[in-house]
Length: 103
Image 1 (cartoon, rainbow, N blue to C red):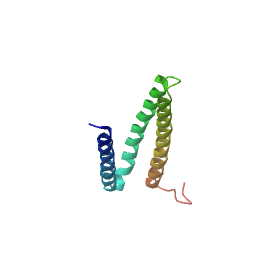
Image 2 (image 1 turned 90 degrees about the vertical axis):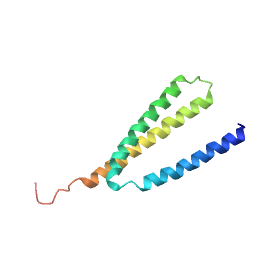
Image 3 (image 1 turned 120 degrees about the vertical axis):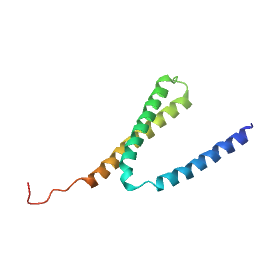
Image 4 (image 1 turned 135 degrees about the horizontal axis):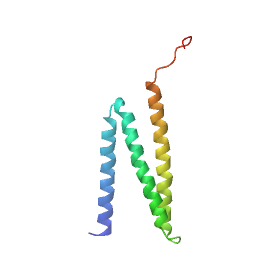
């Protein structure tokens, strides 16, 4: 398979995965959002560990590996922190509020 055909195949699969992901996410009810966010936080934790492993195994002159590892650690950290913030906000919505004047 030539490089051009392989690139077209990979891009086609990527675009189809975007559409499938959007359809699946659009059909998730609000009550399942918080548990799913917790699961994706765990997945991003694995990505974070993978990025750290890539960085630890990369040679100091292997710039592509260093860039990929650094980006995966950066984006993994952003996703984990953002996911926990969103999950915390969602859980705050379900807490009962204290009434004024009661103990």
